[in-house]
Image 1 (tube, rainbow, N blue to C red):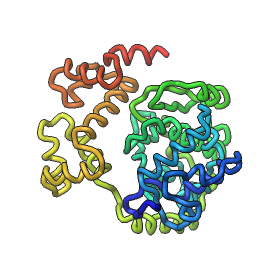
Image 2: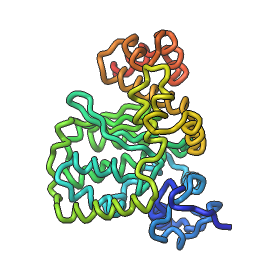
Image 3: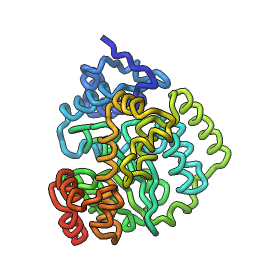
Length: 343
C-alpha cells in the first residue's frame, strides 16, 4: 500500500530520503529495510518534486535508528552532505556574494527542501545566529536530525572558509550532551552548549558581510530563479505556523495577542485557531514555545534581570514566569543562568 503524499502536504523533499537509502546501502543495508512501513519505494523517492509526509518521514528516521542504534549515527549521516546535496538551494548558497546573502536565501527557500524546521537569522549586538527551530515534534529522532544538520553545516563551512575561525563559533543544541559530541569539540575547537531551547549556530555578526570565494552572480541569479519556481510549485511561501510565530513575537506582552495576530492575518480568531489545529499545533502551544526560546536566549545572552525578562515575555507576575520556566527546564531562571554562564 502506498501513502498518498501531495507535495503541499509534505515535510521533506524525497531526494533526502533517496540520499539516506544510498548512504545506508554503502553500509550494507537494503533500501527495502530503510523504507519498511512507509509505503515508499526507492523509485518513488526519485520522482522530481515529491515530498514525504510527516508520518513517512518519522517512520523512515525510526527505521534507520533501529537498524543502526549507534549514538554517532547522525554525525555519520551528515558528514557526506555538501552543498550539492541541497540541489538548487545549495548552488544559490555557494554562488552568493556574501555569507549574509547566502543565509538570506536559505531562510527564504528552505521550505522547498523541508518544513521540519523553521529557519531564521537573528542578531544580538555583535553576535548573529542561524536559528533552526523544530516545527513538528520529532520525538526520539530530534537528536539524529540535529546531529546530521550540524555536521553538514560544519563540513560546508570548512569547504568554503577552511578552518572557519571555529573558536568564534558557538553551537547551542536542544538536548543533553552525549558521547558522540566530544568529537566536534576536539576536532574543531567550537564551543558547545546543550539543553538550549532551540538549535542555534552563533557567530560574529560581521561574518554576514564576509565575501564568498565561490561567488558567481550569473549562477546565483539562475539558481535563485529556480528556487522561486520550486517555492511556487510547493504551493506556499510562508505557512500559517511560521507567520503566526513571526507576528506573535511583537505581541507577547499584550493580553489580546491572539486577536492582534488574527487581525494582521485578516482572519477571525476562530479561523486562526482552526487553521493552527489543522497544522498540528495551537496558538497557546506556539506562544509557549516562543516564550521558552526567548527566555533561554535572554538569560544566556543578555544582561536583563529575570523580572525584566518576565515583563518582556508577557508575565505581569515574575513568579508566574518562574513557574513556567521550571515546567520547561526543571530549574528556576536564576539557577539556569548561573549554572550555564559558569561553564
